[in-house]
Structures are given as C-alpha cells and as structure tokens.
Amino acid sequence: MKIKQSLVGVGLGLAALLLAACGGTTDPLGEASAPQPSESAAASAPIVVGSADFTESKILAEIYSQALKAKGVESSTKLGIGSREIYIKALQDQSISAVPEYTGNLLLYFDANATATTAAEVEKALPAALPSDLKLLKSSAAVDQDVYVVTKEFSAQHGITSLEDLQKIASTSTLGGPPELEERAYGPPGLEKIYGAKFKAFVPYPKYPPKISDLDNNKIQVATFFTTDAIIAEKGYVQLEDPQSMILPQNVVPLVRSDVAENQTAVTALEAVQGALTTEELMQLDKKVDTDRQDPAQVAGEWLKSKSLA
Image (cartoon, rainbow, N blue to C red; front, side):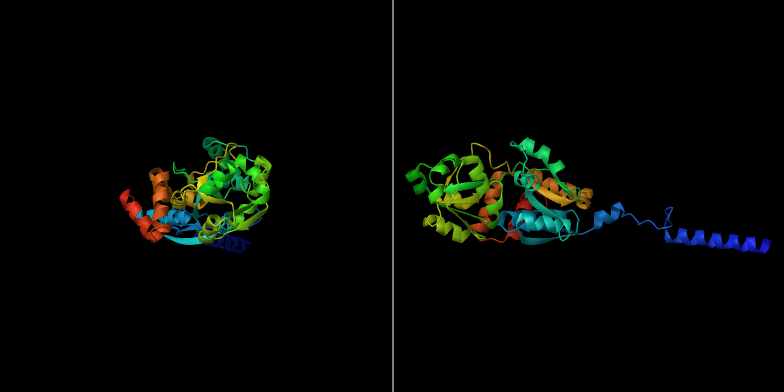
C-alpha cells in the first residue's frame, strides 16, 4: 500500500514538473490557456502601412512608414489598395497595420447617422464609432476636404457658387467623381437629401485625367476633387460652398490596429509626423507628385528630413 502511494506521489510530481516546464496553466476543464503576447513582441512586430488609391494617401503612407523606420521599427508599405471599403477590411484581416485617414469621412463610414459637424465634435464621436480592434492616433492640423467644383465658365453662366445652387441645374447635368462617391453620404444621396439636387447622371472616374478632360469639355458639369489638389488652382475651377456642412471636417489621422496603438515607439514616431503636417505642406507634397512627376517615396523622405524626423 505504501509502495502504491509513493508511486502515485512520484507521478503527480512529474506531472507538475512537466506543466511548469511547458509554462502552461489549466482551467477547471483541464484546458491549457493560450500564451499572451509580450509587450516586447508587439513592439518588434513589423508594421505594414497601407494607402488608398490616390496621390496624397500614397505620400502619407510613405511618410508614416519611413518615419517608423527612422525610429527602428520594421515597416513596409502596401500602396493603392483602393477605397475605404477595401482598406478597412485589410486592416481587420491584418493584411495591413495602419493607414492614413480623414476624420469626417471615417466617422460617416462607421456611423452614417452621425450628427457631428465641427472638427471637435467629429473627433469626440469617432472613438465610440470605431470597432474595438481599430484605434486612432493624434489627428493633424492638416485638412483635406472633399469639394465639389465647376469650371469658371459654367459658374458664371449659371450662377453656381454653392451646393445650394446645384438644384437649378442638377436635373439636366452630370456629376463626376470616384466610383465610391455614388453611395457616400456626401455624394449624390446627400446632395439630393440636403440640397434638393438630383443629378441626371453620375459618371465614375477611378483616375483624375479623364475626369479633368471631361469637366473642361463640358461632358460632365460638376466634379469632386480634394481641396489640396493643385489642379483646382491650375485650372481655375470654382469650389462650391457647403453652407449646410454636408461634407464634414477632414483632418489627417492615422488609423491603426490595436496592437500598433500599444507600440509606444511606433505611436511616438507617427504622432511626431502628425504634429508637423500642415495643409499648405500637403498641397505642396501633392503638387510635387501630380504636377512635377516626382516619386512619392522620394517626396516623403525629403519632407521627413526637412522636419528632422528621419
């Protein structure tokens, strides 16, 4: 009997040693708990910065990635992913780790019924609207709004200077913009609901050159651009006022996965960029790529060096 008890004791002792060696713990059902990632593992994980498929987003993604590398964080880019619908999914399936975003449009994407109108209200509402696996870092003073424009000639001929004026010409006119605009709250649905302007037709333009040519040749009468686009000033397009604030404030902000938000080195690097960005500089960066045909990575690197961030 004593021998059996001794053997049982030895067996229990060996089991305890094996569990300790494996570093496992058990729950009441006898299942081992999953190991938790360490802070050092999160800090050393590579960060993939994605971008939408337009110039400014690509430049910002390059700036973010190169700023991370300058602080010793392994980083790469995945540029031109597509619309918000696509790159948000890429964040959530972990294909990318971070992406440059714009506050107002991001809020409307996750909360189509948001009532915020000012920049402060948008920023206050955003965290609660986001899924738990996505986080926002510090927003920038740099702003890039979506804007509706018409040619100078069309504005003068029809008296169009505001989105309110579109009601006069919408039923006989065509609107042009990126494909995703057709369903956006600040696109045709918003123009009809808020300003009573229902367009005869909508033409999607994945790229700028055809849209610019068609607007100049009156094949479309109204088009959307970004306020930092150099082409607006170059062509003398008239930016239409938005008295009802249909288009929300669009401050540049990094949208990241929660694991990136826990990487203090990465957060510090990205927020240093945010603190240095201005709207005027965004316009100059866009111009260097769109007009001067410079490489986005080169433009990003030069800007970072000018700010002592790389």
